[in-house]
Image (spheres, rainbow, N blue to C red):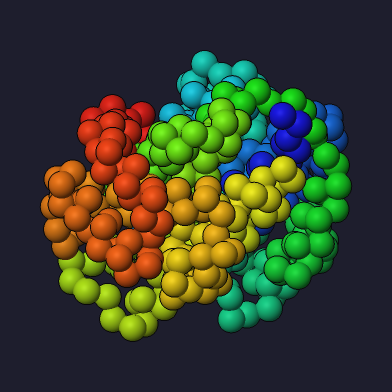
Length: 412
């Protein structure tokens, strides 16, 4: 399949943006600043592409809103390398993103320690440039109520005090030179940054990806989402596996079953925008918390609809909380507007969630899950034909939904 690599990277970056909840575009600002510093140093185009993509994805190991608070609230902290290691583990297994893995691994390593690592010099410089620009953005976040042009001198002075220890003197000089222009600081504002990103996206990197390779990319998205909470670990992987299995049981063709798995893997991207305290709450959600929760499937759709060729998959993924009665969300669609594929993802989502531990209950056995599905069918929430398939093949559906529970490379 022909995939625009930059669209995939942008979608991943949009997914990571959600973790900030009320501090969006951190990764995009880092990508912009790192690229402009690299451009000032006259790096070749291939390296400019690489540092741009590394900037967009450098925090792929961050799913928790608690950890994101450290990223923007402190210059350095104990445990800052934990998310780097998680991100490296995810990217290292991906042929598509493997070339960025070491940059992500070392993007919080101080320059003096980087000298001791057996790395290629360009990897060392790129990792430290991401670290430098990442910390610029953290410092800038402390001045949200102040014009950034008034805060720039303080940011430059603070970072200059860490030359040769935290940051390469060469990179620090490049930053000071590049940031002497107002353009550097003003482009950090959302409306200007979006224009910069739009111009960057015009430089397409289309390339062929095999179905298996793209499936691995979808699993990367799923790993980021499933790492959000110990209660959702493996959820997306299980939904994808069960959706594929239900598609086979329903007699759908191989390509559709493959795309159903992709939809299941990607259905909960919007969950990253939900604060940890809501996902991990042991009691019932109040009205305000329910309102936050009801945003997530819409957020998933907004991200996925930007990838050419995934338009239908985006709908199947985003409609997993719609019901046949029209009482679901976020579009209040009725039965006639819900494809069989969207209904399959919805059933797979409910089944897998019930099979998992949640903060307010333990995992339910297959027979109890089936009883709940049947009740939802009677209430016109889920497709009764699909529930009948589950009943006939209950054991295989259980195995499909839970196969990742004890053997999951995302649990790192």
